[in-house]
Amino acid sequence: MLTFFPEPYPDEFLYSIIARYHVWSGNEELSDTMEELFGNRREKATLLIPKHLKRLAEKTKEFGLDYETLLYEHTIFPFITCFLNKAMFDNALNTINSDLYESTLFIYKHYINPRFLKYCPLCIRDDRDVYGEAYWHRKHQTYGVNMCVKHRCYLMDSRIDISDNRKNRYIALELMDDIKETIKQENISECRVELQIAYDVEYAYENYAYIRRVLCEKHSLVREATISLLFNRELATQKGMVRTKRLREEFKNKYISTNLKQMLVGLEYDRKSDWLITLCRGGQNTVVPIRFILFVNFLAGSLEAYIKLVNEQDEFIKKEKDLFSRPNGYEEKLIYYRKRWLDAWEKNPKGCRFNLVKTDRAAYTWLRRHDNEWMIKNSPQITKPKGTIINKDWDMLDSMLVEMVYEAVNSIKNLEGKPERITKANIGRYMRQKDTIERNYKLLPKTMNKIEQYVESTNEYRLRKIEWAKNEFKREGIPSIPWMILRKAGIRDEDWNKFRYLFYT
Image (cartoon, rainbow, N blue to C red; front, side, top):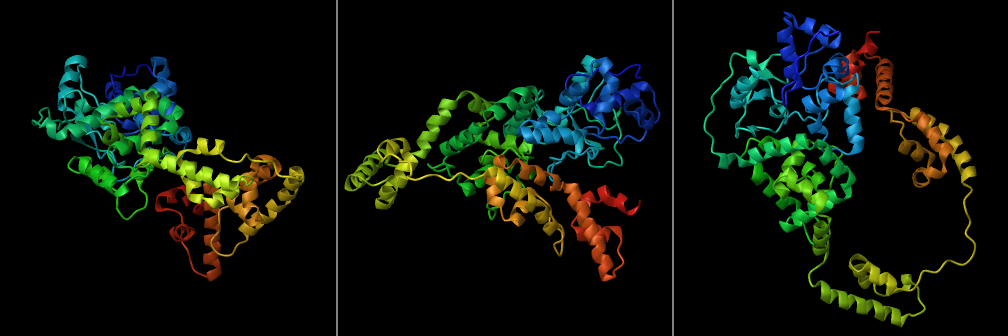
């Protein structure tokens, strides 16, 4: 049981709170601090989100610091999850709480990681005047932030390397002996882009719940707002198609002269799709937050303006959508194609809509795309087909397909060569009923339940590949060691440690 715990300062990084506890407790060894806070002397020090944050929260809740308070107010978790959809958010939360979580953020990319803990010299002065000591600010450690919003100056790197886990220790900012308390004068006009990004990150932290609610509730409007803004800048066509080459050029030109240029990795011209194009489509599955902020800053000038557009200006979006979806000479073409459609109907008054389409497909296509409501009202009514409609006996089909599942699974498991993963799609493919199952899965409950029993998780599939690799080496008479087996099984280098226990038990 803890006898005390430091009261967090405004926007204090959890790393900083633990570092101050280590100093105030008088512990000489960090392992003593880890034992008191996490109940484990071997708890790994981390600069991001502790692996066993819930253990710490159980001991600090009596001081008003429960799990949610620590996670949402003193780590960068709100920033890395702010723009994710619900499924990805739940996955991120589960990853943080998982035993497989190794204190590195799954959403980080190696080339946009923050390298060192950062600080603002002027914030150090202010903190010492107000609180008597300096501390690490959370916003300053958010990747992509290079400037202090309060003092409008560049942040400075400390000597604490985030990527070097071997040397990571909880070091209080007040005890750093190489802190610079002076700054060089900067031309603010030249760094206004980086300053705006810092403002956007601060807005994301302070309005986290509001932003998540808007993006989740109005997800369908995200792409509409994006295309509307691109169209206003002539970066999208009247039909909503993005001019990708011009977009990449203008996007790069905005950020290439700043310290944010490392974020531009992956925007090659010869690729059909990249993260910038994914954001244009409204993708929220693998959103790297700083990229999202760079993108909306490019579109609307700030994150706040973009969120306001999505939330409050539905009519603007609809108006702009109608504008860019209408071709040049819209009114003239509207009269022209309406007349052609009516002429086709007049020539074949007893024909069905299919006959009219064959008569004048161009008129049908144009009206279907731009004046569908009028075309439906001015077309032959759809008539019900004569004769009886035979309904399928879904219960009988369901029972029949259930018996086929086991055979399909056996076929997948007994394949020669490298194993295939047992998935829903793969089972359906080997049953030769993939389309039937995908289109009517709600009518086939027994079949779906049976398939679910055999579907492999990622780890189960990897274990099966490892067993296959072992057998292959044994069959060929080749001596093997763990790394050879893992390499042949197709296990990524960074995942080897998860499976090494198989070779030492």
